[in-house]
Length: 181
Length: 448
Figure 1: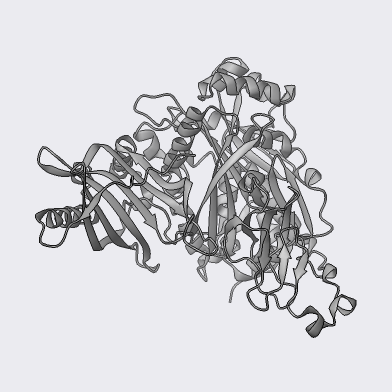
Figure 2 (figure 1 turned 90 degrees about the vertical axis):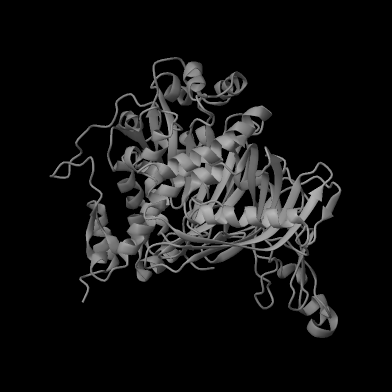
């Protein structure tokens, strides 16, 4: 359907832990996780660049290797600023039943690797373990994924320009994606 | 002690529109469904466009029975049991790919993608060769019955099932609106797959006739301006059709011709021209004369369709999409949803992209319509499991008078097969569950 945007193979230089940008990126991701877990979506939207793209392709089980396990023609998410804002707007209505009562979530962000691209953008790869607990009867749900993010400084502030979420499950065991990853 | 939960009693109550909640969670009811419904009905597996090239395959299930839907080296689509004839290993453990052969990992028996057994290690030493063990007799088994309609591949585990076309009956007329917009047919993408803690019948019932939930369940969509029809309450003007094995919902469109009404829901000119040439006059009459546009639908037992036209840009026009979905039972209280995006192969690329966006925003794992639906269905399933609440009779009698007669008469001059009612009513849910009752009563399929 749509071509996966992915990340062009450009000259990426890996930053070590002494580089201030490494910490700036880590701080950005931790801050973002906090905003999502606290349902402060408007502040979260402010972290996104106007031209943000946000995609989560469907994963499948293939023989022999992981090659081809990320579908290029079906996604769980393929969003831009408009659709992300609409999703937030919906959550803010009184009728977003699937998040009322809300999930208690924890975005655990680990295994961070940060790269500087030739254009000056920062590219971050991280592992995400999303814990989602709802109500008081059912066991919690988990979504595990690797995220690749492109961050750019806009007026001196880091903004998310592109996010690609590669989920590990081919069959999601969460009721829906009324949450952001 | 629970009261009488015999199938006979359940069926009797369901027929009156009083549904014992336990039908949505009882393990014995589920076991009976696996035998009598899924053991006999035609069940959807895949669309032919998922396996375009020789060797392409997808692995699908009929409840717990695994099948490989594969396009063989001669171009024919086959439905092969994913079971090695020796010790019952699954010969394919991926979910999709391309293969000329399927090889069992246990002892190495190897089958061509036609199903023919072509390799048995130590054939001579172990089995005495072809004289004592003719390989030709041990190919992968095919599903007992396999047939397709508009590229939709179905299987039935019942060798005595009626022919697919007879099974579909009058529902074929409606199926074309979802799956045949031109002679080239559909291309489908996906599926997205996820598990929900809900009984499979609830989604099937909802899609076949529940227009009444739209104004409330989906109020958030209207509020944020994405609903194509400005007022969800417009649903009550829609007609509810049912013909033979399936039924669905429609929206009443504003006055206009066939082309104007298709334009109204967002189809580009060239697609409208192809629809005009592809659909029979009596099909075009549903849109052009009666003025109805199909929306959600269900084919018994567990295949649903949705056609909707939300807005995908601020102040933009509606953009229609078609989605196919399977309510794959996992257990009495759990369903795996398979949800595909479908679009006519000849549609302009720009339309395909927009229609895909429309689908993702509204249905599937992240779909904003779908999310709130499933919230309701998981809650019903939890209630149904209650020792006491499972015995509560749920009300499915909308559209019936107190004496059981219908409140409204079927629409006169309806151009399609079956019957249709205008306005809110649970006519279709009752019709779908009537089929369920008939299958449960008719007993088990002959086992082969």
